[in-house]
Amino acid sequence: MTLPTPEEVRRVACVGAGVIGGGWVAHFLARGYDVTAWDPAPDAEAKLRRLVDAAWPALTQLGLAEGASRDRLTVTPTLELAVAEAQFVQESAPEKLDLKRDLLARLDAATPAGVVIASSTSGYPMTDMQTTAADPSRLVVGHPFNPPYLIPLVEVVGGEHTEEAAVSWASRFYEVAGKSVITMDREVPGFIANRLQEALWREALHMVANGEATVRDIDASITEGPGLRWAVMGPMLTFALAGGEGGMAHMLDHFGPSLKAPWTRLEAPELDRELYDAVVSGCDVAADGRTIAELVAERDRGVIDVLRATGRLGGKAEPR
Ligand SMILES: NC(=O)C1=CN([C@@H]2O[C@H](COP(=O)(O)OP(=O)(O)OC[C@H]3O[C@@H](n4cnc5c(N)ncnc54)[C@H](O)[C@@H]3O)[C@@H](O)[C@H]2O)C=CC1
Ligand SMILES: C[N+](C)(C)CC(=O)CC(=O)[O-]
Image (cartoon, rainbow, N blue to C red; front, side, top):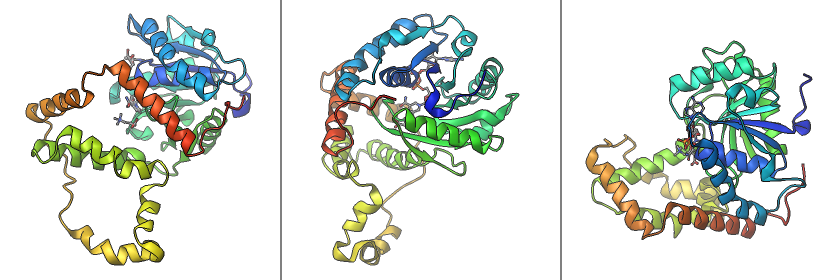
């Protein structure tokens, strides 16, 4: 098989079809690709089709690529069939290191030579996952954000044994497929965005554990506060504006000394039963009777509104 350029890809395989794999399937279908999917769970196909159906109204609102159709999804009975003719593979299996190692080796054995295989891992360095694959040179991380059919960002990075060409091929492919890509030139656990999210998340858990804030307060503190700015400008430029006409330099002179104040506890809290229950029941209170499906629909509508309001959405998606 001759290897396609990123622009020539027509057939994508998604392996693991839960929240993220299913989200990738919906994204690639909406962009007009033929998608094959495999997942070992007995009820996987029904769940996947439900997820794609739930995402389709949002995707239709965003604008489907020419020829995009849910009929272009084939769920295969084996992993080998899913990847046999794939021109790109996205792995989204559970976040367990041994499982990822074995699965990536199996995918490498079954996928046509040279085809790039990306893992959705939330934080494992590819170097740790590519240890048992016969050809680790084509294995990359392509870390998405939930839901991959709406949140543009993908973080791309290779491992010690990944060829640079595979990393740049993957980055270009994701761009062609409508994603917004950050390509990292070195491995950092958690990549960029999850390191940032994790810092916030640890602090939030400490506050719940100590009874300093409710789950609801924490969510409102972001959605009614900094979250509104972050959709427009990241934390750096946002803070540069806190320095007025003096910009970031004045901001650092003025507020830099408070960085040493004990505002944060970056050690992870103990996720004991009490904290676990407080977070879970706090989320039930915050959901206020809304089901997960209702929350997903509400989130999707909101993200589309934000993308539209910030000029990141045109009318129809460009056909590939
Ligand atoms: N949930 C999230 O917000 C995000 C998750 N990720 C990453 O995406 C990956 C998948 O996570 P989720 O979709 O959340 O998990 P999930 O639990 O929703 O889905 C995992 C799917 O993998 C299937 N599976 C189990 N063993 C498998 C195997 N050996 N081979 C292939 N599939 C297998 C399961 O049946 C299930 O459908 C993980 O690496 C995770 O870190 C990345 C970004 C965000
Ligand atoms: C919770 N998470 C670590 C799996 C989140 C991600 O990896 C990215 C996201 O969607 O926020």
